[in-house]
Each structure stands twice: as structure tokens, then as C-alpha cells.
Image 1: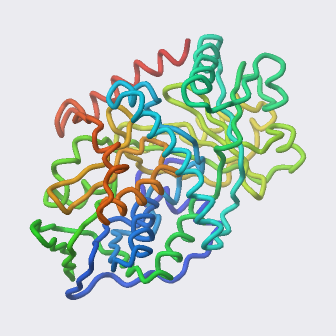
Image 2 (image 1 turned 180 degrees about the vertical axis):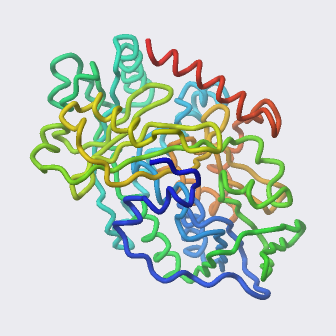
Image 3 (image 1 turned 90 degrees about the vertical axis):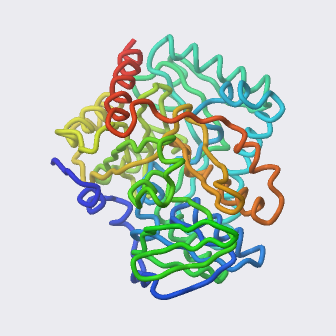
Length: 433
């Protein structure tokens, strides 16, 4: 199977196949006003809209496609404590005290997921438990050191196991060590996102789908234009992440070079014997390795293996993708090497140069949230809360992240993708040893 467009890949998503969407919301037409205009109806935008509406502000949310049609609706579903950058990057830039605050905020991000599931009665197959694994002695030592450091400096405990003891956590010949934590976990990402959209609507948020932004005129009041309408607002939140660049240079030209859209892909196998799933991962945890170019996987509620791990730094879907993903599954679980693959999907996520979140302001009243770098299931919800606090006049926690320094990817518009691809080849070679 070779799919050459994001649209084709979406049509093969297990997540889309396992939900029933409501009819599409109408596109924006005519002139509207609001206290806050939010661009992007993924987790970050929906979270911001919920938090703002709960504070009594009127909110219009514009989505270029459909709610959670981007990374929020097709990711690995892993809600993980911490940041893709690791704590060292935060400590170097922010100092130990602020880095500790950022760590505590990542714990709050996990709690926020569960609070919203409970408050809005979102049925999204939430499961606690996360296993971080290593596939070589060198990476096992690095994992052990990280576990010790988090316990010593941040008071966060994981159960570290190695050798034969690891088989009690995961029956796989590929891994030699693992760290299990009960705080992180997994969920059905699209069910969660659609639940957030319903929650936002119940609070009075006006959501318009198929309404890409074509221009933003900045000033004391913002004027945000689509092809058929305009919204005037006191504040704006840009939460489109890597899709903002598709809207054109008049939307977010200053921040677009600081993130890179990276293609990520997943498969879902045919249904498996529930007893086999329990033998392979007894805790039913989400699993991710500690390679730079990593594999991540978990079992769905209907006992499919959901497996991600192939990335692309060009705009094309990798060749022979289904075969490659099947081979990777066989390396992790030889018992599943010949299991049919029922679904294959993917699309783009955003990464920043230092893998740390990139939050900030463009002028006094236009905020942006981007750079989640693979940790967006939890951190996007937190981002929405922090930007709402900032708009309401309490910017202290938002500014912890706004202080982080971010650089543009090298190479400019023409060479940034080839440059990144060469850099990632280096890290793939490192992962092999």
C-alpha cells in the first residue's frame, strides 16, 4: 500500500473507523465578534476554548478541516509525563527552579485529562500505565540514569527492571530494560478530542469547520479573515501548529520557521486474542522505546496492536510502508509477525529544534501554541489552560514556557527539510548501536 497524500492516509485511520462523527459544522460566513478567536480545533485550541469559556469569555473557534482532523485525531494516544526535550534542556535555559515548575505542570497536564474526562463524561478508553524501554545495553544505562535522576531531582518514581525481569512487563526479545510508571498512560485520541469539542460547544463556544484563515490584521482588535467571513476579537490564539504554514504568510510568518512538519505513521492490526494481548503486555501499558527515532505501541480496547514508528522528513509517504511496519512489529513481537494489518494512517506533527514547547505572543494580544514534538496528548491541554490564564491576566505560568529560546531550522524554505533529513540519518545510525 502506497499512499501519497495526507487525505488518503486519513481515510485508512483506525480511529476514524471506530467513531461516529456528528455532521460537519458550517463554515464561517459573514461578520462575527468575540472576546477571543482561536485558530485550530485540535486539543490545544479546544482546551483553550474550554478554559476561556469557563472564565466567561465569548469564543469563536475556526478549523480549516474538521475537528481533530490533524495530529490530535490520529496520534499514538500516549499521554506521557514530561517533555520530548528532557529536563536538561529546561534546566539549562530556565534554571532548576523553573524547570521543576515545568515538570510539575506536566503532571498537572495528566491530571487535567482525567478531570475533563470526568467532568464532561468523555468515553475515550482511558488506561493508566506507561513502559519506557531500551533495546541495547547502552540505552539501558541511559534509561537507568534518567530514572535515578527523576527520582533524585523531581521526586518522580518509576519501577526499573532489566534482563529476565523485564519479561514480566513485556514479552519481547527486543528489549533489555524498562521503566514503568503508573502516572502516564493512553487513550483513544479521536474519541477524546470529539469529547472536548462537545464540551466546548456545551459552554457556548462557536466552532466553524472548513474555515481556513487567509489573513489576520493585527491591532488593538484583531480581524481574522476566512474566504467567506471575518471575526473581530480582542485576543487571538494560534493553535494550528504545523498546519499554520499552509494558511499563508499573512497568518504566522514569524513563527513558522521554528517548527518542522514531520510525517508520522501508524498501523492497526487485525483483532487479536485478548489472552495473547495480556501475555505480551500484562499491564496493558503504552510502550515507547528511548531511541531518538522511536517506536511506540499499545493495545486498543478491541485488542488490536496500534503501532507507530516510521517517520518521514519529506512530503511523501515512505515506500512499502505497510511491509516495513509489519516487519518492525515482528521484531518487537515475533508472535505477531504474520498478523494482518487492517489500517494504515499518518500525517504531520510539529517538532521544534530543541524538542521543547514553543509558546509565546505576537504583539500584545495574539498568542501561539506550537512545538509539542510528540508529547502533545497531555501538553496541549495544559497549553490551553495556560494561554487562557494569560489572556485573563494571570500570565506567570504561561511565561515559564515563553522564556524558552527557540531557533529556526537551518536551511531556509528550500533546504530545511534536506538538512533535517541528513541530521536524522545520523541519529538513526546512532540508534543502531
